[in-house]
Structure formats: structure tokens, C-alpha cells
Figure 1 (cartoon, rainbow, N blue to C red):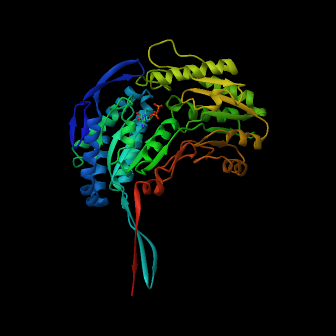
Figure 2 (spheres, rainbow, N blue to C red):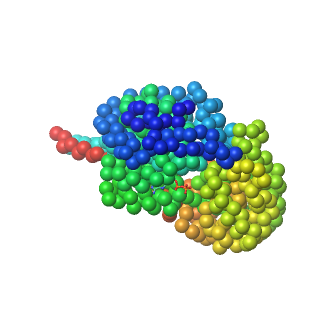
Figure 3 (cartoon, helix red, strand yellow):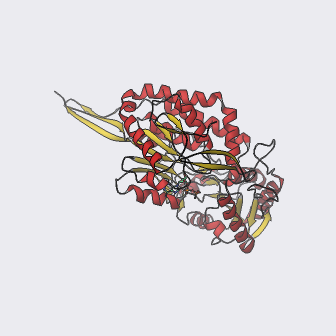
Amino acid sequence: MTGKMLINGALVDGAATLDVINPATGQPFITVARADQAQLEEAVAAARAAAPGWTALGYAARGVLIARLADAMAAEQDALAHLLTTEQGKPLAQAQGEVRAGIFQLRHYAAQTGEPIVLRETADCRIVEHRTPLGVVAAITPWNFPVLMVTQKIGPALITGNTVVLKPAPTTPVCALRIAELAAGIFPAGVLNVIVDANDLGGALSNHPDVAKVSFTGSTATGRKVMAAGADSLKRITLELGGNDAAIVLDDMDPREIAPKLFNGAMMNAGQVCLAIKRVYAPDAIYDELCAELARLAEAATVDDGTRQGAQIGPVQNRMQFEKLLGYLEDAEANGTVIAGGKPLDRDGYFIAPTIVRDIPDDARLVREEQFGPVLPVLRYTDVDEVIARANTGDYGLGGTVWGKDLDRAVDVAMKIDSGTVWVNKHLDLPFDIPFGGAKQSGIGREGGDEGLAAYTQGHVVNIALG
Ligand code: ADP
């Protein structure tokens, strides 16, 4: 692992360097290259120059190279998972799952064929839509899934014939740089460029005149900036932003059966998942028992360095997030009843004890805002229509879950949740051929599925007179 960036086919040092912190210790574990504005310009210019040749290769030849990157990642998946845990904090088993999913995702995109779509065929006319690439795609990724967010963006962007400048989050650039090292020997120069910043180059990348599309995953606040920055050159944008997903438990559920599913859905990756369960609504009849059960699971969970055997919940990823969560813990203490956790662990690193909060009002910050951490409010409801309205409150609309034994009733509730995805009696099942994205201010556009792939292309309709 050199820590070098990939620009125009070469692994290069940065104009500056960046220390990357291991969140389990709070200490730097590697120093990597960091770009300045001139290197950003080089990366965009290289991507622009490489675009015609890459497009001309066609789907099959591009797919072969994308599959080769997947193979290279597969050949070192344990080492990559270890790197992922070290920079991000999640338990090794989750990191291994993420790496496997990333490899699978690249293979999924490598197999796409991009056939033109015949829109009309009559005796006197044939209309065909070709999907052509956009040009240079800027891929800007967050720190919660440092492998999966990279493959999720470079896979569809590259197979459809675009070239890419990828900028990972500054607190988790290491896996992206390792993927860049693997890619350096595979793709023609300039097809994939990976640069690192210190949260200072995202703006320049997202309003660069030679960038045709920005594919962004991150916070809603930064997503707004990306959208504004793209206005000058009318960039295509895909924004996958925050969520404050509600889990609605119906009164025919057994609290003991449902509690582990809710707990895992809220605490996976220490709650740092855009689609994590961020608030639970439980009916009067089972409220007390469900709260007690969730608290028991929280107390029993092993919170530890993700590389340690048995760790179920790792540290949160960075100091800023850690401090933000301390604020939510204060809010929970002041406005609700903390029945498990409630404080950071007394050790180095950014560890927060998994926390369950009950009897907290809907207008508390922990309920209204996206906590993005292992702190879960559990709210009581009486009437199903009332709980649907409460779940739909606020500007987010990413996901949500409904849990009930009477499937018709559960689906009926799910239909009324204003979000891009809603699961019934399951959570986080996201196959790559299913479109995923946000309603309201949780995003614009979709990733995955035909819709996600089409978002890296533009329609080119050829309308032919026959006879
Ligand atoms: P967080 O606030 O949780 O760190 P962000 O949404 O700010 O999340 O970060 C997601 C990604 O957006 C990161 O790669 C970050 O460096 C990048 N970023 C930060 N500021 C901007 C900006 N003004 N324009 C584009 N991207 C940005």
C-alpha cells in the first residue's frame, strides 16, 4: 500500500499529505497523498482526454477490464477488509461483507451490455434509442462504506463509457487508494483517476466545467452545495443523501422476536448507514417489553476495535461524528429516558455505548435529526394513521420499515410511507438490479437497476424513415 493517488494512469505523490486516523485508537495509522487544485485539474484533464478512447472500446471490452478489477480485489479481499476496518471502524465480518458486495457489484456492472432500445418499429419507421455516455463523471463518496460507495459509482460510470475522477471522503481514503493501485495496471491512462482532499476540493470538482456529471453520496447539506455548484454548466447529478428512517412495529408482532432485527438494523456499522433504522415506533401494547428487550441487547453487545474477535459494534468513524453524537446523548438525557448506554466508552478511540432512549418526544433533536450513530429513540404510538403521519414528518424520505404479522395490513402501511424504499418484515435488502434513492430531501435520482445505469448516460434517439 503506497498511499499514492492515481492520475492519468500514474500512481503519484500529492502536493501535500494527509494523516488517516484509525477510529479505534484515535491515532494516525498511515499517511497518504493529498491533491492540490493543480492535481485536481490534471485528473479532470486526464479523464477528459481518455473519454473518447474508452467510449470507443464498447461494453464488452470495458466489461472485461472492470471484471479484472473485481478479480484483483477478490485476490486480496481479506487484506482489503482489514484495511477497511482499520480506516472505518466496522467489525471485520461487516468489512468482509462489504468487500464481497463491492466485488459482486463490479461483476454485475461488468456484465451489462447496453443494448439500444427499439422504441418503435413499423412499416415506415424505426426509432431506436441509444444510451451514450456523458463524459467525465466526478464521484464523491462518504466515509461509511469506503469500498461499496466506490464500486457503486465507478461500476456503472465506467461500463456505460464514462471516465471518472473519484474523490473519497478525507477520513477514509485508504481503500479507495488501494483500489486505485489495483486499477492502475488494468485501465488505460485517465479512465479512472483517484484524488484525495482534506474536504477542500469537492466544490471545485462539482463545478468543474469539464465534469459532465456528479454522482454524490453524503449529507443533505453538502448535497445542496453540489446541486448549486452544478447549475452553471447544467451538470447531471445523482444525490444520495441523508435519511431519518422510521421503523413501524405493528401490534401483532412479538417484541422478543422483533427486537434483534430492529437492533441490528439500527446498530449495523455503529448506526452509520443512510438506511439505518433511526427511530422506532412501537404500539402501547408492546412498548414496554420492546424497550426492555432492546435495552437488554444494547447492554449485551460487544463494543470493541473492529479487528478484535467478537466485536459487534465498532467505534464511530471520526472525531466530528463522535462529538456530534455526544450532543445527541445530552439531548436524550435531557428529554427522554436513557435505558441503555448513554455515554462514550472510557477508552481511546471514538467508541459510544449502544444507546436506547424511551419516552422521548417527537420534537427532540434525536428524533427530528439524523443521528448517524448507535443511539436509538423508541417512540410510543396508539393509532396507526397517527404513526404514519409521524413517520412521514420531516424533510427526509430515504427508507423505512414496517413490521407486522398481518401482511396485508403491513403492506398497506408501507404504501403510505413517503420514501424511496420501504421494507416489510425485512431490512437493507438492496440487490444491485433494484433502483435505490430518496424521496423529498434524501436525494435526487436513483442508483442501481436500469434507472441507476441510465443516469450515467443520455438518450440519443435515431428516428429512421423506412420504405
Ligand atoms: P459529512 O458531513 O458526514 O462528513 P459530507 O456530505 O460533507 O459528509 O461528505 C461527503 C463527501 O462530500 C466527502 O467526500 C466530502 O469530502 C465531500 N464534500 C465536502 N464538501 C463538499 C462540497 N462543498 N462539494 C462537494 N463535495 C464536498
